[in-house]
Image 1 (cartoon, rainbow, N blue to C red):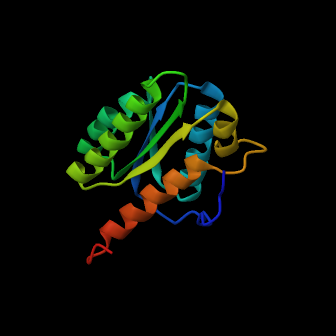
Image 2: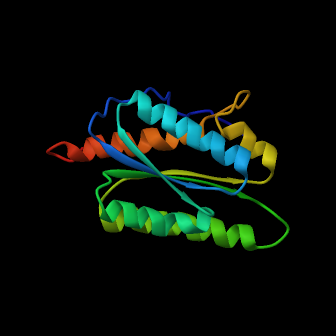
Length: 158
């Protein structure tokens, strides 16, 4: 794992920005770490936050589509997919990724991508933003969603 090249995450100020965090519940310790990181970031950014829980990563696209069709300015999708001994990992990872991309393009609103696709539990723990983690992918996904939402608010869209 390498965090080389990762941006420094400093919360952008986003008062009034409505962000919904859509979080899967599989792999509880990692999932809760991702959620905590996203919420820390969004609180520091002064965004208005709502949390929607879904069973797993496969359900993220539909939930994000629904919240973005409502009053959310951006969504943050958080999930954990750990490789196993069957092709299930590939199907779920592909469906979640493709679905979230489609939701962002169809809605014209940002979807911060915080879906961990890892080979084992330790890789997830290393990225979950927990004490001792090397990275905080929940905060990074929230940062991406907020910064893009703020950028899209600019008259030029950039």
